[in-house]
Image (cartoon, rainbow, N blue to C red; front, side, top):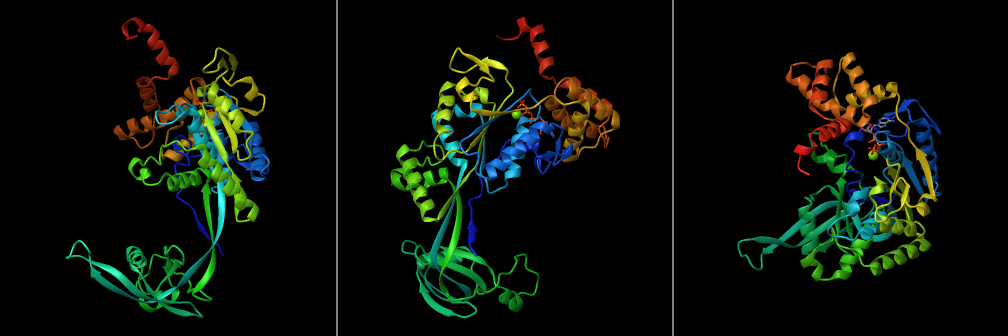
Length: 453
Ligand SMILES: Nc1ncnc2c1ncn2[C@@H]1O[C@H](COP(=O)(O)OP(=O)(O)OP(=O)(O)O)[C@@H](O)[C@H]1O
Ligand SMILES: [Mg+2]
């Protein structure tokens, strides 16, 4: 069996708070259930998204793009998140808001390029020679620290590893000894040592040792003592993204200066580095030791992109290693940033032309009520029937987003008043205290002369 090693997935989705109730698209086959997986209504859009998910899984969508278009608060972001959930943890999903491309550290196109490459996974298979077994003896020899005579450091160790059929004793050097001590390896642990790099991996506590020594229940699940010889070839599977590989390769090439200037986080990456990585990946795919997993790059509020960014996207979609791109926009016909041209959704026509468009429509009062109920459950807030009715009215008239946002403050007011459930008065109170967009615009108009311009 191959061991899976994957980096802790970084900020897979930061803006998830308001959408934590969304668990998937709520489909049965390709049909949308009225209420399922936290999703309510919007059936056509969800069914269209379901087809997209199938195509992505079958690898038939790479390099193509989708636009979710509709008024504010109609579930565009929610559907994008549901698509991510349906694809599962193995498929990379990177989310970016249009305005995030404007940063002080990087060019706009570099931000987009890095996001695209984070949206493409590479599963690398590697056979490595390892020593594997249960530790049955571990005698550490200590020596004095070269600069600090009061400190003792491990110099070397004698180590015995046993499998069900084999037993080997080694003399290991200071770095392996230190790595073992750091990881708290003791007798009865199953470990692997990479023959080439000396990297030590503690696999777990052996079943046999657990039976013999431990009286109290252990929290760790015991692992069996390995079979076969101690020295063996083992397959490891690493799932990384193209961007991870770019960074690793850039750092190695960067030499000592990289230590001083660090910058791995926010630095631009040399196009040559990317080319090298692409070549390496392609070679390994041909060899059969790597697989490419095209993922999704979601760009929310796409009207914030400018003409340069759009041109870049257009070109990037044509490249061999491109993720599926999902865009979302709540704008009608508006100016394309960086030009004087008006265009639907603020997207240039040449890009618009190649998009598959999914539209979302405003919700009915019943749908709003259902969504509010789900959100309340998610936030652990109870409400009286009339309070829910008022919130539903607000949601249908003003905006769903605004009504969803009122849940927490209303719950705070109720708690302050010693009420367990939110009452109609609590909703009225917060609705009076906070302004929605319409109210705040009206306010601005009224007091225009008095506000700073
Ligand atoms: N069909 C739905 N089922 C359940 N929850 C939904 C649905 N549609 C929207 N929501 C929830 O309602 C809130 C507003 O929706 P969302 O943010 O997805 O709208 P949007 O179309 O992306 O709006 P904007 O154009 O302002 O970005 C979110 O909390 C979202 O999770
Ligand atoms: Mg949105």
